[in-house]
Length: 180
Ligand code: IMP
Ligand code: MG
Image (tube, rainbow, N blue to C red; front, side, top):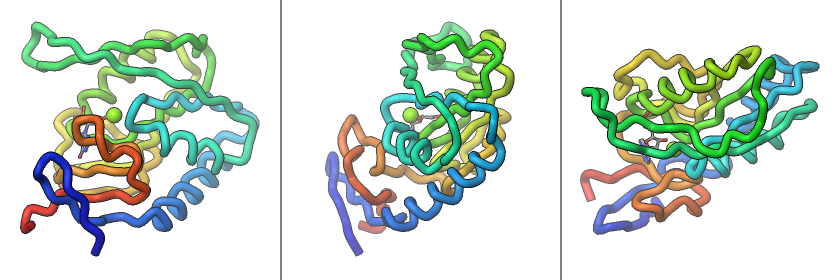
């Protein structure tokens, strides 16, 4: 069992790259079938979703485009706490079929806010593709269309997911090992 340490915490290998690849290929095939002739726009939410978005895009064998956005966090005055603002959306998404690509949906707050902001720009449709989904952590209604893996409410790193900026370059996905 492979282990990695970051910030004094131990993580154990949880999903191998070969399993990720297999899942990404299957999702790409589904997206290709669902979006044939629609030229979807993959919108990758930086930084975490970058490896997944690029791999998923390559696994989708139809005409499609990819673009990248960032979310800027700021403290909201409301009780919802941290709200995030979309940065860097240079594409006109009006009338486009948008596939939002995220690394992980935890509470769902980020995705819910992002979808609200994007809806205002009148795309033809918005779908959500997320590599990881923690259904037990969900606090708002978010219903991903394409899910890589459903996982327990634990901290995950690797394949784009970070701990304080590190571990994004791990090929496999690791989970916090609370027994270690
Ligand atoms: P949400 O708004 O609670 O759904 O959180 C989404 C964001 O929190 C993700 O885009 C990640 O950046 C971060 N996040 C949530 N869970 C994890 C995790 O297990 N590992 C690393 N980042 C996480
Ligand atoms: Mg993220």
